[in-house]
Length: 195
Picture (cartoon, rainbow, N blue to C red):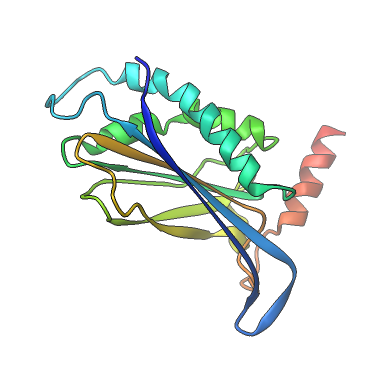
């Protein structure tokens, strides 16, 4: 099975101030939305979703390229993924397109990612908002990186489409101050383990 990418949307947000306080460095958040034709739309229940899972590998490679380009000179510290299935499909179609084999090319492109990737999927009409949860790419216990992006695809997904979304951020929440493990501690721990 080969997926037909009908259109893409790339969103970039740079934020350097929150609650009137400037950040030492801006945080860049990017979202890549790949809207693909759903080959299972309108076919009712299909037991074997393996063809969708396998077809998601090149989709992951495509999304990785766009996401890294959008991140620009910044390094990824956190990530998240989501999918919105058009009304002629089922939620499991997005989940099949968002498994580890889809995400691994993105992990490779950003220099790794040891932590699981937060995700959200649903079936919805065009223009429905989705909140994409995000967490630190190497350790889910870095509280400062519990964040997300809210996205709307105004004209999608159409009933026979799936909107596949991947988000990256160059840092955690601005002014995060609830304690816990820090990004710098995770980096130091990884360096020590590889030495």
